[in-house]
Image 1 (cartoon, helix red, strand yellow):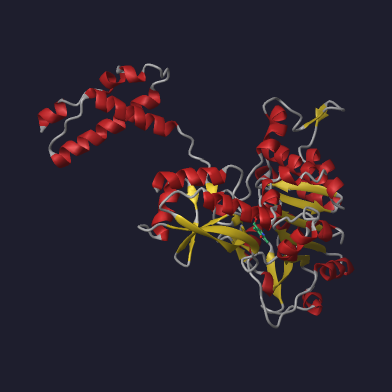
Image 2: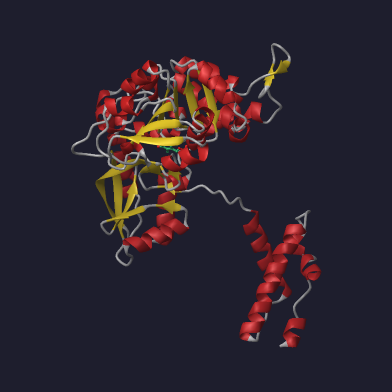
Length: 458
Ligand SMILES: *Cc1c(COP(=O)(O)O)cnc(C)c1O
């Protein structure tokens, strides 16, 4: 065995192989070679034999090096029908909007510089103009995500004070976002009122005392209580808050900005369900103290927590030292501004999530039909009606109509096909032992890619 070990070439010897000639910086190449040589040593120990020539070792090291050079964040095809898929990066980003913001991002810029006055400026001002054109709000602040937005508001206004919330709204969203826990870590005291299914106007009024700071409403994004229920509209919560000089605050969740992106009546009736979500524009018409929502759910932009409301409250949020830890960077800020401008100009196609939502059923059917025609033998397929979902901790009980291509193979189970597709970067779903490719979440070119992959595994 020892002679086998001594036949292993040194790292430097492998490194001198011509295959590495084109690579100028060799540190990572050496690392790959070391890993390959380690593997060979393991093999000698286990099998007591090896017969790798230096050419083969160099080739293996080169391949490993190339593999390690690839970016770890890779594009996937989302054929699940879940639009805001938290595991798949939530809302997709538009390359058109990225192009628009590129010049400012790849240069020095005025992120915190007031060009008129020649002195320090404030980053949040950059987004203020476009936001105030969109909404009836006095001011805006943007932080890392919606969880951070909620935390910052509670931490600023309710440390050691009571926050009144309906028992039915103590939600957990996406496993780690739990209202009682965020409340606790912010230093606020949770004061739950009402019962799981019913909370009344008077429950809020009776719970108010000298320690009360905020009346909080949280949108139950991921569940719905049915049957005998009652809850208090935000408009009434605002009224109570005003009467008692308290702060009203609504965590809207998803950030559905307006209804205009579905002006077509037929489409509106197809998508009607999603407008059961609170619509930011309509909530802002009530002139609340503060509201917050996510940037990368139905809003269709990047990860962010957007806070809108009265100027003097936002000013106090800006004075909280924690904001320094929660603040967004220029890439987020620029992309958000570009998204909001697209909303203002009603350029829905610049927002990939809205484009997917807006696709008429006939188009989805046509796409499924085209894919069916191109399906390689021996796959066979049928087109079925399907239920797409918003996802991202939203509306599990509400579906968006869609079409899916259901495919079968004489020798493979649906799960087998699903795994083969996944290995080739296509994420599909299996329902009732059939493999479904949902048309609603396919981006441009995805259909061609799926057919190519199916041809490969056929
Ligand atoms: C999703 C959601 C959150 C969390 O938002 P992130 O942007 O993921 O931090 C908070 N509140 C509600 C109501 C939500 O739906």
